[in-house]
Image 1: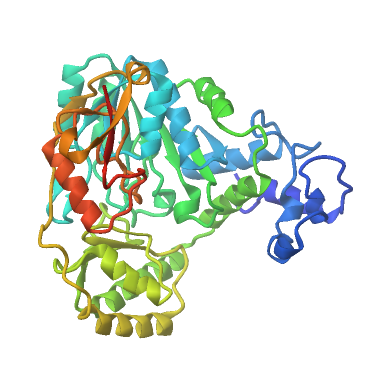
Image 2: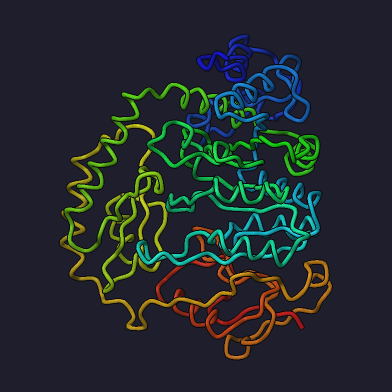
Length: 474
C-alpha cells in the first residue's frame, strides 16, 4: 500500500477548502462561532472538526476514507485489522477486557497493569488472576512477571482464556514477549497487550520487538505518547486466529463516542504517515540526539543515567536514578523551575522522553543543568525511612468478585485500623497510574508501609484523603 498518502486528513482538508455552509453540528460552525478569547489558538483546527457528513465516513461503520486510513495503519504495523481510538488507550483496554470475557471465565493479568485494565475487568465481570512482577535490581523497580509465574498461574487456573500484559513498561523496558505468546498459544490462550508506550517499535530493530511481531493477538497503542498524534489518539490492532474481530468492533462501539473527533482521527492518519516516513538516516539522527541528551544529563553529579540494554530498553526513554539523599520528586521540581518538564518522577527515578525528531535547544538545556547542579546542594535530605519494597503473592486472586464487592457496604478506616481489611478501592500513584493496592485485595502491613513511604516522598495519588486512610469492605 502507498504509505505516502493521508486519505482521512486529505479529505478533511479538501472539504474545509470548499468553505461549506454548516447547518449541522458541531456548534462552532467550522469556526464561525467561537469565543474571541480562544479563536486565535483554535482557528486552524476548527474547520477540520466536522461530523459524519456525506463523503467523510463513519468510524463505527467505516467504508470510505476512515477505512482506508485504518487499512493503511494495519498494513504498516503488520496487523490483520486496525481500529482508530478517540478515547485513548483506555478505550482500547476497556474493549480488550470485554473481549477477554468471551474467551474464558478467568483472565491472567499482570499485577502492575494500568488502572484502565482493572476498570475493564470490573466492567466485564471476568474473574482476574494476577501475576506478580519480578523486581529488577539493575533498574531498582518492579518490571514484568516471570514466565514461570505465568506458567504456574495457568496450571493452577485452567479456565484462563487470555493473558493481559503491559509491554513495554512506563520506562520503556520490555521482556521476552515471544516466549509468553508461544506458551499461551500452546494452551489456545490469547495474549492481549497494552503497548501504550511502544507505537514506534515497528520502526526498526534498534527498538525492542513490537508486540504484533512477537505474536500478540490484540495490541493497544497510545499513538499520542511516542508518535506525533493528538492526546487521546490511539490504535487497536488485531492479528489473531483466536479473536473474533466482530466482538472487538462491537465493544468499541459501546465504549467510544458516537460523535468521534475528526481532528483526533486525522492525527492518527498523519502519525502513521510520519512513522512510515522515518528513514534510516532520520532514525540515526534521532538516536544520536538521544545519546547526546544522555551525555548532557550525565554531566551533573546528583544522579545516574540508566544504561540502555539493546533489545530490552527503549532508547527514547531516559531514566535518571537519583542519589539516595534526595527523592526523584525533589529533583524533578528543580527541572520544572527551569521550564523543563519530565514525564514523571518517583521516589527514586525521573523519566525523560525524547521525541521522534532530534532535540534542538541544547544551549537552553546546558544553562538549566548548570543552575540545577548548583541548587542540588541546597535540597534537604530525604526522609531516613529509606527505600521500601512490599511482598507480593506470585499468583493471586481477589477476595471477592467485583459483582459481590459492588453490593457490599463500605467504610472509611484510618490506616491504623486498615490492616487485614479488604480494600474497597484501588490505591494508585499517578503517574504512572499503576495500582499499588487492588480493589478486593487484603490490606497488609507491607501495603501500608509502602503507601506511607510514598506519601512522605511527595508522590501524587489518585485517591482522596489517602493520607488519612482508605475505604474498606464490611
